Image 1: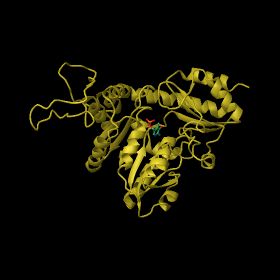
Image 2: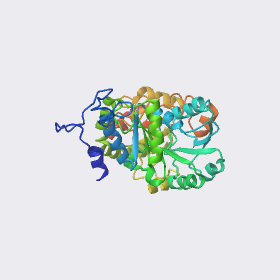
Image 3: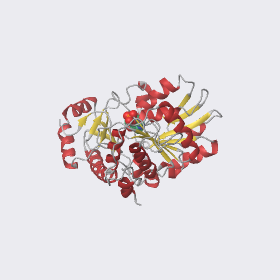
Image 4: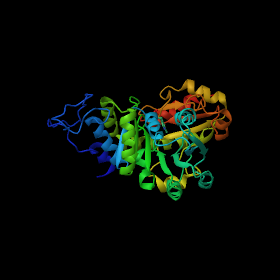
Length: 378
Ligand SMILES: *Cc1c(COP(=O)(O)O)cnc(C)c1O
């Protein structure tokens, strides 16, 4: 089946006999046993619930994975993943990382005895140079948030195989519609389902998707034991969101390209970071490993005042954290997602008082451009 069909019919399991087209919301914490030692396949909703199972099967198929687990948020998924590691283990991660992942690693995982090396993973030799005998995993965000660095997934996957590292890819920005990391050699894919997968800025969710049965078994054990599972109702909202993933991604990308090109020509915009522009340093890698560029744009204005004015003047676009939904949102990374990153580190990456990040939604691109135009007026 093609991807857009799988978004709608990703799991063909029928959970009841009414013929319901929309999968029912099984709002039940527990399930009766038909007899001693017998199970319907469902015992307790922390372990599995039919609505959540339908969602997980769909995500696993979309990512070409063996199994997918649905969590109550993206951070819950990443926190569960960290339970695979032991005190003394080292972990390499992209240096331009989602702020929440950075906070988890430095303030919680570090306390539990893990050591982190942060590097621009688009630089393969710099990444390779950090590998030590205690290094167990590499986590790559590609494109990164907010600087849009792209990592060559086939190259890092080769590196990880040579050194026995687990390769984890945060695929939140492109989704499996544009990029399938497991096909390129990753072992695990992480998602904040809150973003494009849900797509409506109304539900928090997270996913771990794995390629093989062994890793699935280890993570399922952590999943049922630590318990940050997605509720039946939120699972249903995710299922509903994913049905339109393919059309949303296409249209949002189309508008993002128009907006990125428009920003490049504006006199108050000094730099535009969009992976779909041929001037992007890793444009060639993006073309090779992904079927699209997504709809996230970062840009640098000519002054702090321009950035602050723009945030206060936008009307259609809203000043809010998060991304990937039908509503266009603009953020100020320095004050929001990246507030916990030390100033020197942040500024060295280009996350300064002039940098803004735009998540292009599903509104008319003409309205979005008109909104930016009035917000950038003198
Ligand atoms: C939002 C986000 C997360 C965290 O997900 P939540 O659903 O907010 O917990 C992780 N990675 C990336 C790239 C994100 O954008």
